[in-house]
Structures are given as C-alpha cells and as structure tokens.
Length: 110
Image 1 (cartoon, rainbow, N blue to C red):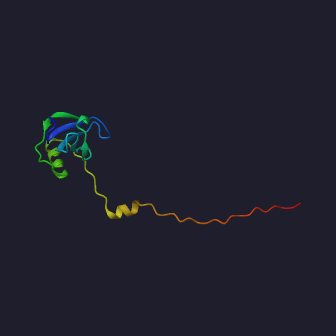
Image 2 (image 1 turned 90 degrees about the vertical axis):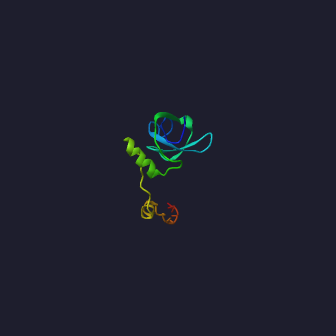
Image 3 (image 1 turned 90 degrees about the horizontal axis):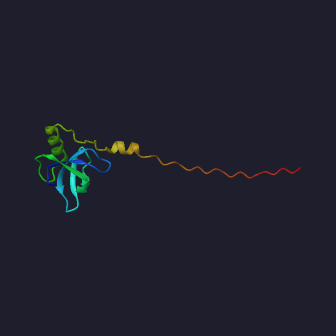
C-alpha cells in the first residue's frame, strides 16, 4: 500500500493535516516524503494513504514533485534558499564587554 507515488495525508507531527507523496522507501521503518510538507523521512504509521497516486520516479527531485502537484491541483511547499548576504545580516553582532571600575565606598567620619 505504501508504494512510491502514493498520495498520503500526514496525521502526526508538525505537518499534520497536509498532503504528501511517498518519494522513496528508506527501509522497513521509514519512507521519504515531499509535497505540502517538508521533504523528510517519516514513519509510515504517521501517514494515512489516500486512493490517489502520482506517477513519479524513485528519488524524484522537489521540482518534479511541485509540477506533479500542480497537475492534480495541489500546491507543494516551496521555500527560498538562504543567501550569504541574508545569513550575514541575520547573525547577531558580538557585544563588547566594557569593564566598569569598582567604586570604593567612602565612609564619612563624624
């Protein structure tokens, strides 16, 4: 039932309620998924298989999955890759530690 190209609904985790497609069988315990979800390995018990299948090859690229989802009227998750310029801006600048002189308490004599 969990064949490559099978459309599934994610029922557990952060991406629960989103549709995905099985891209590869990793081993007996995990499959590789992609689609409205993040591309990642997943336990098949966290997936609910749907009747629909998509014709894709094993280890299909994300672009292939996006085009296959467009054909059936779904929108796949797309993210923009981080650029070096953005990564440099998002890094927090180091704070310089300034030494503050310790003040001595002055005791006034009466």
